[in-house]
Length: 288
Image (cartoon, rainbow, N blue to C red; front, side, top):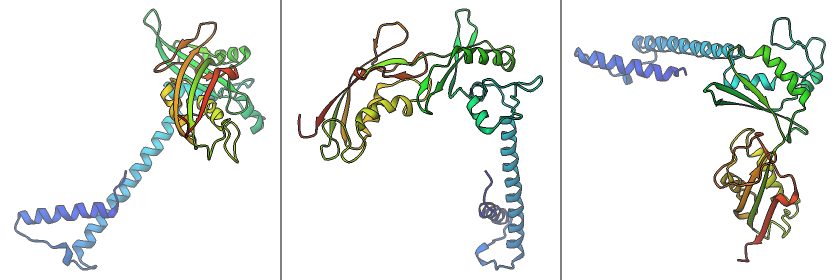
């Protein structure tokens, strides 16, 4: 980052004064007038250095932008490639870039059906690096859903052309992992009703907060941590204390397993499938 003119000028002045002192000349910059030649010469040099450093910053920024535009397929490049996949659209000749000629902005936006994507590096049984592409769609802009097989087939065909030839990968999508939790919540009765509604505001505010963590408080394909979920509940206005009594999760046809410290969702996300999966014991502050 470019230094200011004053910073550069001060450095030059201090160096000049120190160097002159070594040969027996005492320089006092505080006595320089506005028309002093030494003062003005140092200012001109400082300004030129400032301009040079500013131009260098612009060059670095421009270079970074151009490198990003080249879409290098590292972990983040693959994620962008997945999110920008356009279902039902052709690509340009001998290119992985989609041809949007003749399509409206709305049609282009609707074609981008992959709303959540993550790239996970794994080592398979043969010691070979495998890139697992976890993807999901969305029904309302927030809810995460499994993608249709037709979309996965089209995406796979596209990646056969667009991915690096030497990379080994697989695409996965699936329904949300199942989770069950039980909370004990102490609340301020001046702000929250016994049923968990906000007085004069949102209904079921505490219950909604527990559900919202699985979408807003937890990034796609991230690890679920019960402590973070509890902290999210604690942050609700009117909640004075939050405790997670129990937590368990599963996916597919497997049995539920107890979650103590963390859980990595197989599908990349979690969901309460039934109302009974989320239990909340509400206790007003004045009752122990």
